[in-house]
Image 1: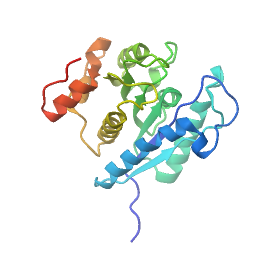
Image 2: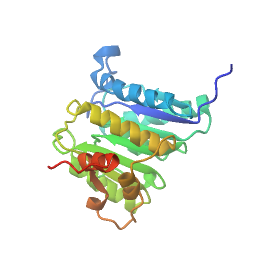
Image 3: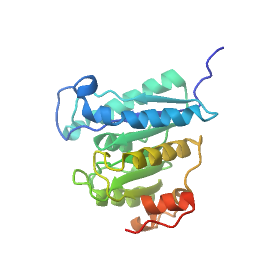
Image 4: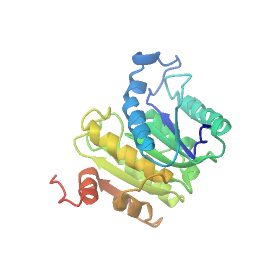
Length: 242
């Protein structure tokens, strides 16, 4: 039986460093790449339970760092999107990035295939552009205790991007960490629900959809959700106390 063509795709971008022109280490020595494998598996399991065929691909970086104005991972992401288009055709794509990979995903979101971005513990320098996010759905997930990248900068980016024409939301993970090791199952479940919902192969949690529908003038705090309260709303339970 001929395999059905994919109806959508997810492009995964792992983290890296602020600078570093050498290539990422291979295989299991690439710890940022290794950290994204559970997310890839979780998305794959969700796809097997869906009527849609979702293609999952990972970006391969030529260099392990962002490297200032060179923005090396951004060029790798754009090249991967072009290759994905040649492989799968004009399918909707959600970019899933962590840390530096989330920065690359946000910057690459103007590519015509991209429908949305899910950024995990994203690196969001205040000077990065947001005009390319117009017309896209953007959900950023950040630990309140992250010491590597700033949750406040992520929240600020959601407001700037909303004013530029994006539909944005932020989810705060209490007690999490930058590497997404603490509360790992919650990170995996939420991310899978977000990716599936943005692609239309699943349902977005109601509070996330409501946040995405906020007007451009909404304050950053209005589009910020707490993971535990979000899960409680999804499960119909009382919210966890801070």
